[in-house]
Length: 305
Ligand code: FDA
Image (tube, rainbow, N blue to C red; front, side, top):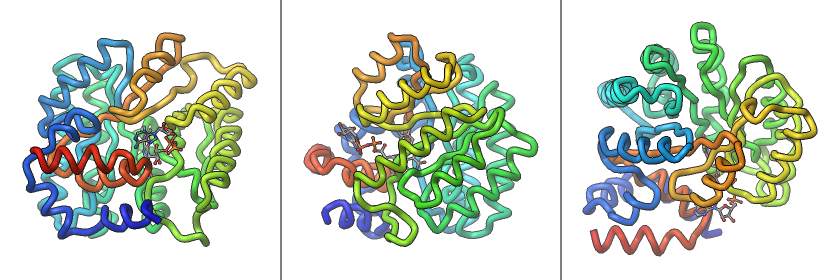
């Protein structure tokens, strides 16, 4: 129930504005968000990569409703990729992009062109893009855009949300040679006709998807903090004789950092999803919906500034 309320609040424009213009919460910055600017994000990226982790950097923002704003988002990504390139971090730092931030709701063609520009800049920086997956109503469009992007940029990563009833089919279609696929549980509100709604069903779907991806020829990116699923992924990798560099674990910045370091110390590839920017509200609300204990942390830091 609380999860549904928090997810509904995450899409509320009015609350978003009020929260984002409040003094930037130090708790949020330090716990879940790497700062407001690309330079601040890069400081975090250097620290994480210096400690043996990989990163994927996300410029926070979603649900863009005008083309000028979408253009600003593209420019933010180009600036970020320039910094990554100059720092020589292309081999360890990729970027994650939300198509809704680059104009998907306005015009699919515009979002495709904007994403193409980010993919080209990523390639020039020696790295790649992964397309985040958002609300279930955008999945078909995101997969269409992914197919187009992969014509020129086959390294572009896809995301499958295990809570979707179609997830296993999506994994089967994406588990081909050279295909980078991030598997996550799914963070948005979705109705029961398209998504599993109980934790148990979602976890079972996650395992079915893992089996398809680990048996396939692509590069699975196991995005979860769930200890049981991490263990199952490791066991499946052994079962399928996968080399340690043929798949990776992914976790969010600020969540289970000790586990991130433990897996990396054991020789696994571990990538941390590092968000930065002023539009932190939707992202933070989804983290609260996953774990309402975070609500107190975020509210406290917003109030104290
Ligand atoms: P689950 O929520 O069951 O948590 C398992 C355990 O992890 C908890 O018991 C707790 O210990 C810890 N934990 C989990 N969330 C926490 C939190 N917020 N705060 C503190 N502890 C927490 N979703 C999506 O719809 N589209 C996308 O593109 C992505 N992209 C993405 C990238 C990466 C790298 C990750 C890790 C996740 C995503 N997600 C996502 C989010 C994902 O769908 C999911 O909502 C979260 O990862 C939480 O689910 P878990 O698999 O961690 O399990």
